[in-house]
Image 1 (cartoon, one colour):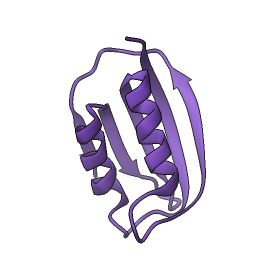
Image 2: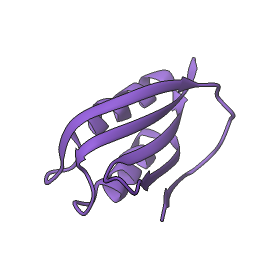
Image 3: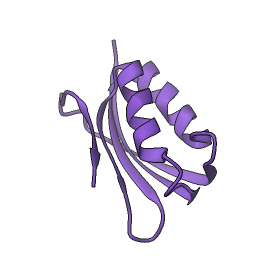
Image 4: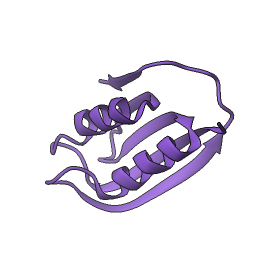
Length: 91
């Protein structure tokens, strides 16, 4: 199965609404590895890696976010897969 790794920056009302922890739960449910963190400017950044269809599904979820988030945009940049395992919330 094709593997995909991406970096994604999500803008909008995405801090203080459980976005990172919800993203981590969704990543674990989908079997996607990587990390997610808040940026100082109010955006959220994530690095995602896994089966292409699973990464695509997580990106679709991230474009909406959890219930109280208001995502206005997301920028996705392709990366070279590294074979990482697990998902973590970076503080």
